[in-house]
Length: 122
Image (cartoon, rainbow, N blue to C red; front, top):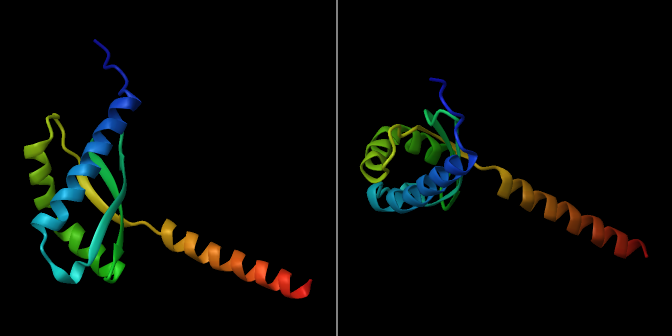
């Protein structure tokens, strides 16, 4: 019997649930003041649910340090998710710093400079 394709809606529901659970678990279970304030921005699952790329932002800490700490504790967070989620396969977690907020801030600065320069020329 052929296996049915994975529903994209189910993937999004599970990714959203993982995002909510990690947002709660990280500050409660990984009480490391050097990590600053970690925010889970997005979770992307592979179609087979084997891997989850977890995008995060951070305030008050170095992103590379936080990414290393999160990836080091990914197995522990995986075990906590396993207890919460009611799915057959809980994905392996891979934490990645989300550059989009930094890029958006840089773009806003460039736009502000261009507007100021244009206003000065007029």
